[in-house]
Image (cartoon, one colour):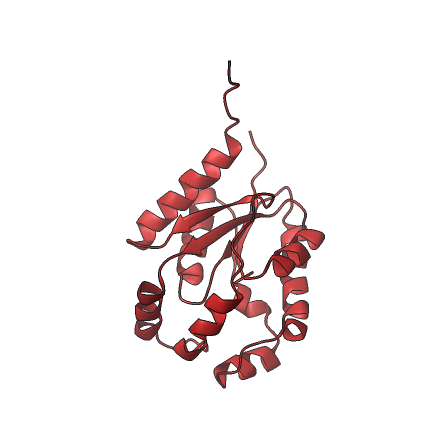
Length: 175
């Protein structure tokens, strides 16, 4: 039996981290933690006012997520975090070296439409451009997968699960 991963569901605002994260956790049989719950109140106030966070705002948030992920090492878990920059993912890996990233990705129009439909979230669509400008996709040396966010939440979750399973399947040796 394999040890469950600690998965960070990442991507720009509106990709479905809060929807897919719990579905993925349920499918994997591990707990889910909502990354937004790790933000200090000052960060939420800043984003609610339409002001993007800077790196100094993000470090304590990332450290709190990293601490949760580290506590779940060997037990598994799923946590959401935009983790847009390589340096943010490096910070998470410094706290929890075994984390695996699921990058939820889609085109801007689809994501903006989804953001307009959701209610009660502090992230305004006005910050979407800054999110895309900040995004640094996963690099080849980062353990993770990219999952397209088109379709239903169940379809996206199935793609994420299959991609994670493929990470765990050793490649057949070439003759």
